[in-house]
Length: 243
Image (cartoon, rainbow, N blue to C red; front, side, top):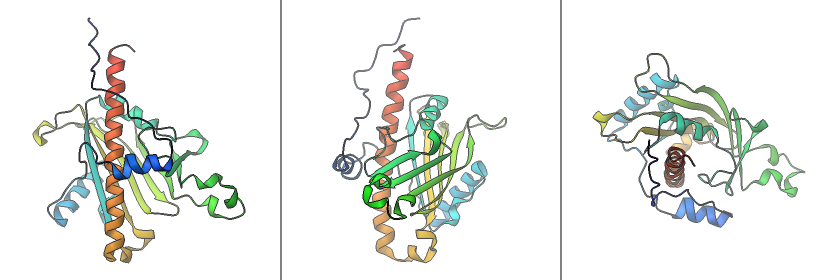
């Protein structure tokens, strides 16, 4: 069989090298493709949350803040999921200088994310701050292969999210595209987070806090998913070409 030619348009995402680089790439840059799922009503959002619960066993709609992002990737599900399992501080898809990733014991089961990598700062060695990560992700469940009766060929990672901020759940879900929903790529990736501000639902009633957090979160998440799509499609093309 003849090896398919490499596309001239597919390149890997470029790595950032500083906090300012992260700000430019993840906060200021407009993502090539919007990823935030829009709902016409709270009822529609709750209905979608129940669909997620049926898949992962956790009702993320119970939290005061719920953001769901989605992107299509032209690569097989198993390839996309294996890329997810490689998530670490060396990733070109994550603002690692702003939110430094630490894989505890080099495992995907427990991940700590530190603001600006301050866990190693000498000024913090005399305080308890170095032991309080911005995010403390603990794996609740990982589905590496689809269930026997799963028509969507799904895989996912489900984490509880504690630490400094926020408190809630975080899920990355990968499934086959559904043609009736207008999805054309091989795989669909969902990234969802549900939480109450610092564990307090009433904080979400404070409009400015809610809007500012969502604006930052949605911009960063959209750029993360677009970069992840770029990386998966570039690597899969090279794999097909035998490189």
